[in-house]
Image 1 (cartoon, rainbow, N blue to C red):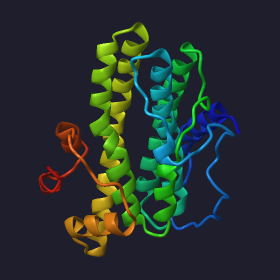
Image 2 (image 1 turned 60 degrees about the horizontal axis):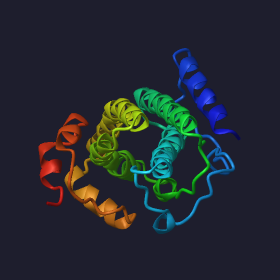
Image 3 (image 1 turned 90 degrees about the vertical axis):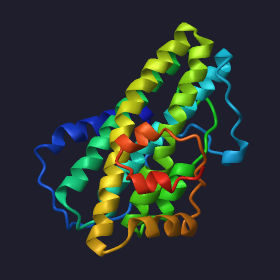
Amino acid sequence: MHASDKVADVLALWQRSAALVCDCDAEFPSPIGPGRPDQPTLIAPALVPRRSPFTPQGHAALMHSIAHIEFNAINLALDAVWRFAGLPEAYYRDWLRVAAEEAKHFALLQAHLQTLGFAYGDFPAHDGLWTMCEATKDDAMARMALVPRTLEARGLDATPLIQAKLRKVATPAALAAVEILDTILAEEVGHVAIGNHWFHWLCQRDGIDALVFYPQAALRYRAPSLKPPFNLAARSAAGFTPAEIAALPQ
């Protein structure tokens, strides 16, 4: 499939969803895998080259890596919709909206890459986000804990640092990228907030202490270690509790 076709299909699905009646108890057969284009080539995370924004090639590679995250985030949100049955209708509508917004983010980055003379798929990438998605396929609570609240929340921390580097570059392309990342960051706060909401909803439903469950799930599913600096303002806006923020490593 072509990446732009997926974006169009997801946006069309979101537009139709207002008229859809949700059968929240329905279970669907598992697809073979997420719909992806043939490129980029997927390699081990440690083999992905370092990306400096201070050269045109490095800038393009950096923006490609962010586009890859956003494309994967479409699949993560769609997987959250069909994977787990029996949840409130609001859960499914929340994640459909996330999928549509991730598709818009990808489209912004793809258009930016084209102004640089590149396209999505021109650089290698890794599959770390989908690996965690697969690992938590049988555990909705762990999925909410470790995908939106861990992997995607890392974007809240990393984006201001990336923007600071781009502002130092100060080329028209770099400053355009800063504006795109402003848009993405604002909406990603909302996506992480959705993950926080449904994680705590599931914990409350099942009588589980969220602060106890989180480190256990992180250890069980080998989530990446959290490292400072943290964007505490964005994390607070995304619904992390004061106790959860206090538990972050110093």
